[in-house]
Image (tube, rainbow, N blue to C red):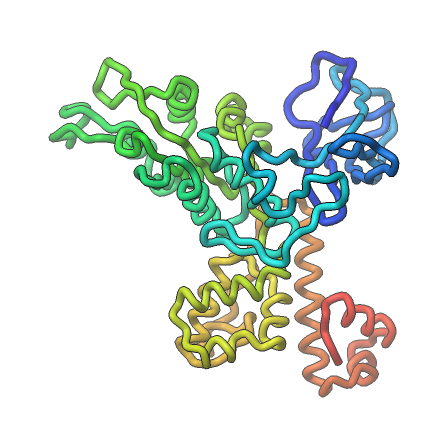
Length: 431
C-alpha cells in the first residue's frame, strides 16, 4: 500500500489493513487525535478492484465509509492523506507454486477447500491468509509476531513455523513472559552467574543460550515488564546476551517468535510498551483469527481434535452430525479453539453430544459461568457481540418454550412476528 502525506509530523499508527474474503479493509485506530482527510475524520474504507488493469497485481481503489464524520480543520501534524493503491500480498520466493491460494496468472486465486499448516487446519479465507504468511515466515529467519485472542492456537502456529523452517532439527524453547516475576524472568531468559543474587548457588544457562541455533518462543510478550524491554531490544538488534552478574556479552544465533493476546499498538499508544521494541518484534506480523471469525473451519477443527483425543469411530460419528456441528458454529467460544477442545473432551467423557452452552455436567447445579469480557475491544464492538449472543440465546429459548411455534412465541414475547423471523434467519435458527 502506498500512502502519500504532505506533513512530516505524523505520529504512531493511523491506518491498518485487514484482509477479507472479498478484498481488504483499511481502518483507522480509535485513538485520538485521529486521522483526517481534507478536514473530515476518516474511519474506514474497503478496497475494490478495477477492471482493465495491467501487471501481475491489479490496483484497487478504496471506497471510503466515513462513519460519524467530524468535519473540522486538520490538526497540526495530521495532514491530508491519500490512499493511492492496494496490492495483494506477494508470495515469498520459492513458494509461488506450492503455496495455498496463489496463482501465476492475473485471474482470481483459486483457494482449495481445505488447507493445513503443521497441526493447523482451515478453509476460511482469513486463516488461509495467515497460513500463507506463516509459510513465508518459515522460509526465512525474520522475527515473527503472532497476534490473536487467548486460545486461538498461537503456540501451535509458532511450532508449525519452526518445524517448516531450516531450524526444524534445532531446539524450540518456550518462555511464558506472563508466568514469572521480572527478576526471575530475566534469569530465565538470559541466565545468571554464580553469586549474581541471593540463591544463585551455581551458574545457569538462559533460554536464549539454550535455544542457540534454534527458535525461542516468547509467549505473552505483551506482559513483559518495562525494565526488561530494553534488554530484549538489544538481543533482537545485536543478537547478543549478557547473563546476570556478568560484564561481557556473548553472541547467540536464535530465531525469535513472539505471541500476545493484547493489541500491542494500543499498548504503545498508552505508553506501556516500547515502540522500538514493537517494531523489532513485528517484522513479520501474523494475525490469528478468532474462532467466531472462522466458523466454517469448525467441522475440520472438530475432526482434528477428536482424532487427537483418540475418539472411536462411533464417538466421532456422534460428535460430527450436521445438527451438532451447527450448534457448535453458533456458539460464541470466547476461549476459542482451546474452549472447543475442552468441550469436545467433556463430550467424550460423558458419552454425549452436550450443547455448547451447557454447564459442567459433573455439577448440573453449578451456576452458569458469566460471559467473558474483552476489555481490549471498543465499547461499541463489545456491545454488539453481547447483543448478538443475547439475541441468539433468547430466541432459541423462546422457541423451545413454545414448541417451535413462531406466532405463539412472538405473541408471548410482545414481538412482531416478521421481526422474529428476521432474528431466526440472522442467527441461523429454525422454527
